[in-house]
Length: 92
Image (cartoon, rainbow, N blue to C red; front, side):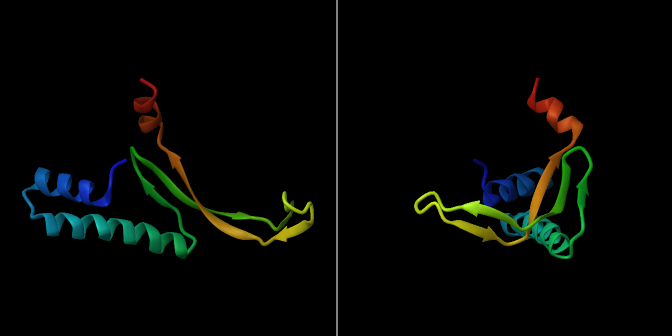
């Protein structure tokens, strides 16, 4: 697993920045994606993929312990659709 700090360190090293500057850039990118998602907007990063907000409808589910039927509220979820270039690189 790669962490935010590892990504920030790599950004800093590749662009001659301090680790603090690298971390600020990475955190700003993540914050921009998050704020777009909260607003219900899609974020597209060419060559990487798209972050989209999808609505899930209300549904009925069953509690496995009791067998009782319960309602699961409608919600929104953040999905990621990788770009073709990324999918191709993964499947080489």
